[in-house]
Image (tube, rainbow, N blue to C red; front, side, top):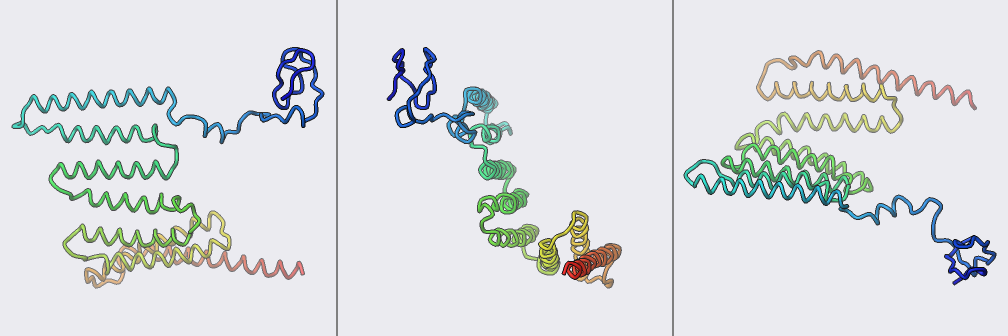
Length: 293
């Protein structure tokens, strides 16, 4: 505890002059102490943690949304009661949509701004409204396809951020298995039994995975942007061409390929170009190392 020698005002730690009479402080740090304030104030991280999640402006917006939603629900309930049960209009469907719609609007206002949390919340809300709409129509049908698609999106687009790229192999395995399972479920939803998954979808998927693995190993050794783009086009051409081949076998067509012949020609030219570029790079690197030695 230190005080000014001239006016007796209490001095804060690290003070170099009296705030009242401007007398210079000549005490050492052991007596006056060190300042706890930084030059630019608190850091952005500390300020963000101290800042309340819901400020006054956001709170007012939330209250407005809740008030409008409450008014809409009351109007829908009164309308449904007034027209009676013999009318085909049912207020419960509209009320349910209002509840879920309010969730879409309030999610970014009441939840922390984190990608995983907001993405997962929107996926759940989308699943809820799709299943709710399909159930109101008379049973679950098309919503099963959208549900599988949303789950696949979460596994590919959100799950890698859940594990925070610490387990890259686990993320890749989950993505590979989830895409295969998604195709299998689509085949089941399409009919009472599995029809096109094993003879068509699975071979195409396996060939695409093999091409993607080879492309990934090649990328680790270094590739230019143009080579990456050509490599992706090559994989797409091979996948579509393989799809044509296995589909023709599935329908017992006499031709080996039909419309995909041009794609196979493009794939062959791209493969030759990428092989030539990789070979030239290796030869150049070999002679460069020889000259340096």
